Image 1 (cartoon, rainbow, N blue to C red):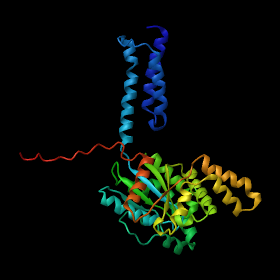
Image 2 (cartoon, rainbow, N blue to C red; image 1 turned 135 degrees about the horizontal axis):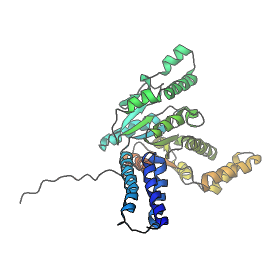
Image 3 (cartoon, helix red, strand yellow; image 1 turned 180 degrees about the vertical axis):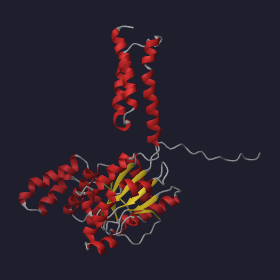
Image 4 (cartoon, rainbow, N blue to C red; image 1 turned 120 degrees about the horizontal axis):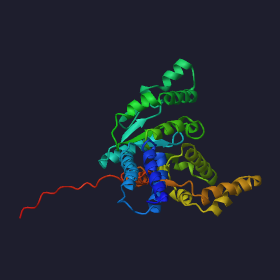
Length: 340
């Protein structure tokens, strides 16, 4: 074996050795690319004993990678339901639970709103067991918004205690839906919910965000742009797979007006926006329309809770965003042989 091959063999062994103690979720693809380049560069003289020993690092790498992949394949899936107050988040959670119960798909609804009182779904976890808004307002003399922010900051301080202990009760491949408060600052600029998400990621949970916006809000172009920017703010803040939903479609009288905003024509939007705003905002209007159109960063899925097909379509969009169920085994039903 020439010195260049020996150097490659040593490098292969070191790659495998170093990868054992690393966080594979961050470094595994990089190490695998290094390993691939080394293996293709070195001639396949595997009969040489020293080279075989050197390539034992490859086996170590693949073994550890297999353990990582197996652990990552079956994780708890968390869906964060966010959106402005009154957008229908709790109603969505209730309808989703009923739909999944009909499909014999198990989901668990978690209440993350310390001000909530009545529920139309079974509550699997409840933040009010940790802290409630009424107690905070009474003891600290805070108002509703200030009290809610205090409750969420208290939750952030107890992520490693209360939340981790509660989540340990659920098995791999469970599906949890978090019904979040409606204060928009929680998912726009205040870091509480972002830190909550980062904690879940560090625990290797598969997390996605579902942003609900009242479809009756989409009555003109200015409100449409405002809704897009609010949704985009949440997307940038949380950095999660994101599905935007137009809720309460069953209450819309003229659905054709809504359809114009599901697949908007940029030139029409810009023309309408310029008509409604002062001339000095022309460049800003153009930049906003280009952001919505060219980058395709924000799009909405309509949801009509009266139709099971609409709920199923929304659920399919969410499943696709997090690749839920792609690693599930095919279930084959056993049939009794027919009597001759």
